[in-house]
Image (cartoon, rainbow over all chains, first blue to last red; front, side, top):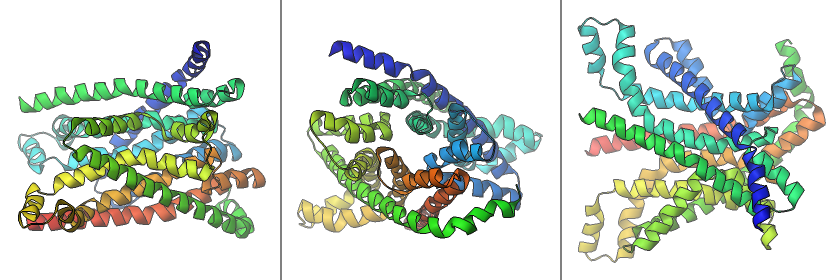
Length: 218
Length: 228
C-alpha cells in the first residue's frame, strides 16, 4: 500500500512542473492583456475600439475553456498553425483570463473617485502621468483580491490542459490509472496535490492584501 | 484561405451537423440543470449548517468549502466516475457528471446564499418573530422572498459558469455537446469549423443568460439605491 502510494506520488509529481508552467504562463498573459485592455477600455474614447474589446470579452467569457483549447490546438493545426499542447494551453487560458481580468481591472479604475484624476491634472500632471502615477497604483490595489482568486481558480483550470494531452498532473493521473489499475488513490492524491499547491497562492494573496490594506489605513 | 472558402463546409455539412449538435445540446442542458439543482441543495445544506449555533457544523461546512475550492472539477469528475468503482460504487457517466458539478458548485452556492442572507437586515427576522411568526414562517414569508430577489443575479452567473464547465463531462464520456464536437471533428476532419460551431452553441445559451444577470443586477442596485 505504502509502496504503491510512493509510486503514485512520484508519478504525479512529474506533472507539477507543467501545471505550474501553464498556470503562471497563462496568469502572466492574462494580467498583461487584461490590464492593457482595461486601460484602453477606460481611457480610450473610441466607440469601435470599445465594441471590439467588449466583443472579445463576451466571446471568451461565454464559451467553455475546453472549446477554446480545442479550437487553438486542433483547429489551428488543421489550418497549418501547429502549436505544442503546453503552448496552446497557456495561450488559451491566458486569452480567457485576459477577458476576465479586463473586467476586474476596469472595475478597479471605475471605483476611483474622479477627483483623483482631476486633482492630478490640476497640479500639472499630463494625463499619462496621472494614469501611471496616481490612478494605476490605486486601481491595482482594489483589483488585487479578485486577481488572487483568479490565480487559484486558474491553477485548478490548468487541469483541463490534460484534454489536449499537455503532460500536467491530471495527464499523469490518467496514465497512471492505465499502468497501475489503481484509481481512487490516484485521483485523491492528485486532488490533495492541487490543494497543497493552491495554499501558497492563497497565503501570498492574503499577505499582499494585508500589506496594502495597511498602507491605505496609514 | 478566402472567407467564402472557409464558410463553405458550414453550407455543405451544416445540415448533417445541426441535428446531432442539437441532440447533444439537450444533454448539456439536462446535465447543467441537474448539476444546478444538486448545487442548490448542497449550498442550502451548507448555509443551514453555518447558521447553527454549535461550532461543529459551521466548521464542517467551512472545511467543505475550503476543500472544494482547492480541487479541480476535473479531479472530482474522474474520482466519481473512474475512482469510485474501485471501492464498489458505480454510477452512470451522466450521474457522476451532474453530481460532480453539483458538489463543486455547491460550495460556490453556499457563498452566494451567505452573501444574500448577510444583505438582509437582522431586524426583518426579529420583527417577524416579534409579531408572533414561527421561525419557519419567518423564513418562508419574510426572509426567503427577499433572499431570492437579492441572489437572483448571482444564481444566473453561477448557472452560466456551471453550464460552461459541464463541457468537462465530455472527458468522462457524457455524450454532451463537447463530446459530440470531438466525434464530429474526427469524422469530418474539420476541427476548426466544428469547434467554432460548438463554441457558438454554448455562446447562444450562455450570453443571453449573462446579459439577463447583468440586467437583474442593475435593477437590484437601483431598487436598493432608491430604498436607501
